[in-house]
Image (cartoon, rainbow, N blue to C red):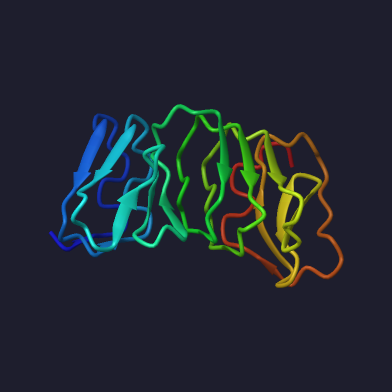
Length: 178
């Protein structure tokens, strides 16, 4: 197997562990969406494209991009220290409550926290001037872009901040209080 396509294992409620072989070159967009019991994704050490960090998170071989945070991983807090947070990387994790975006994060791709229904806070480390959290929304300042709205925010009325030019697809998905 060289590629695992988009949504390949989507909604599988049984699988708890996946081992990815040395020949896999591509992990498609959101291959493990809503695999709520998937706690471990193990990358073969000989894989030239991906590896696991010390916490079992899948990252690119150079360690610069977070690719997949297992949807069934039960940690409630995570500090992201990658340069890039990949598209759909945390999708469907219903355990994570507090995210800290490290000072070295430069890029956040689309929908990294989609259907992470337990997130209560996203904090930005001091020194990171590229992102901010305002009124429950994660904003990329330079591109004037709303990345996500924290679904547990209790605000009933939301005003798009002045200067915003783009709102990511599904940014407000499951914003049940709006």
